[in-house]
Length: 300
Image (spheres, rainbow, N blue to C red):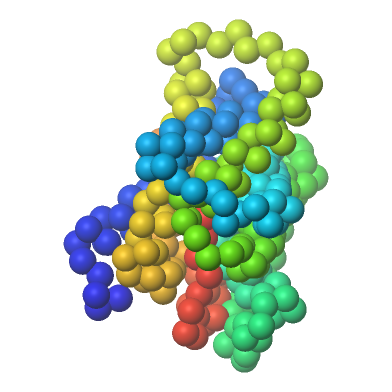
């Protein structure tokens, strides 16, 4: 971290803003589009951007020739599933609550890595951190769901869908450790390209009627989702890692849920209860305790 320069700090701040704002953009886009449309469009827009950049840079994909099954798995667990599940869950859950729920992703990754990644065994700090994260979910899930007399069950199911999205991201992170060494831009382009191929038929089968005005806030949010939290953030994400390493970037785990809460309150007039703030503190404390040498960082 001592080697980090102002440009690296700027990159980290940009990632926090883009990743943390994804929940705001998704909530606004849901006013005009279905979760399927949001997930598919976000992936396709980002894939087109990265493909263009990869072509300009004359990226080579040859090192991935024996890893296409892994690429498909990464496309499913890192893009298709979480983008859809989070969008679906946000139909009944505020963007700020979604941001808090997603904060459990690095803690979930720690547990999964214990069983599948050599050298990533659980220790007392990681166990305690995971317990804190679990307690934070309990604090958030109960009162927030039952606070609404109507649709309480729907809120619980929506929260569970978002948690499933966090679990999907965690599985993706563990799988990514099996990737061969090579250009991270090429890997990202390949993953998003495959994700586009997977999502496009699903999107077309739905036969959705768009009927959206060109200046629609939902359409703008859809474009922003694809361009910034998905495409541009991926480029900055890997650039910062290459310059100063993943330990420096792990700090975004603490900042993304806080930014998501602020965006929901400021732009969507969301009001979250005291239990949500308590849950946020408990989950972030769990992340802090679990951090020993390295900490897996979030992608949204």
